[in-house]
Image 1: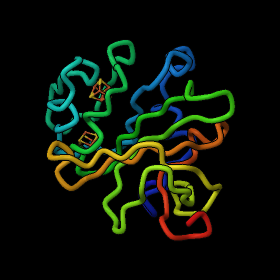
Image 2: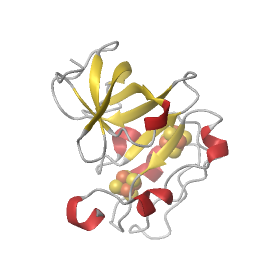
Image 3: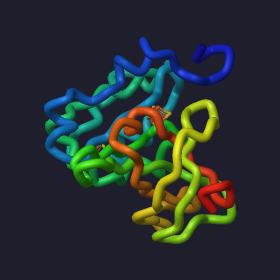
Length: 165
Ligand code: SF4
Ligand code: SF4
C-alpha cells in the first residue's frame, strides 16, 4: 500500500505503465509518482514536451508517450527518485531498466548486480550496461541494467555486492 509503506499497488502502477505499442518501439519513460506534491523538475527537465506543462505545481505528471525519446534526462532530476526508463527492445530475452541510484559503492559497467523489486526484495541478477554520472546528473547517477524481459515492470533497484557481486 502506497500510503503505508511507499510501495504502489498493482492498480496504482496500471495508471503509469506506458502503452504496449510504445514499449514495443524502444526506450520510454515510466514515472511512478502517485501523490500530489509541490514539485515539477520532471517537467522542466524534459525538452521534448513529453511531460506536460503543470497547470498547478501540485499536479501529478502527465505523459505524452509519443513525444518521449527515452533520453533519460528527467531521471536524475526527480527528487522522489520516481522516474525510470524502460527499454523492452534491448534484446530477445532482456529489457533494460535505467534507474536513479544514490548509494555507494557505485557498480561498474559490465558488473553483475542483484536486481531488486520495489520492496527491496531480490528477484534476479543482471548486468550493468551503462552508468551516467556526470555534471548533469549532479550526484544522482543513472544506472542502466539488463533484466529478464518478464521483469521489466518489476525491477526498480539494484544491490551492489550481493550474490550478484
Ligand atoms: S526520457 Fe527524455 S523525452 Fe522522455 S520524458 Fe524524460 S526527458 Fe522527456
Ligand atoms: S519531479 Fe518526480 S516527484 Fe516531482 S512531480 Fe516529477 S515525478 Fe513527481
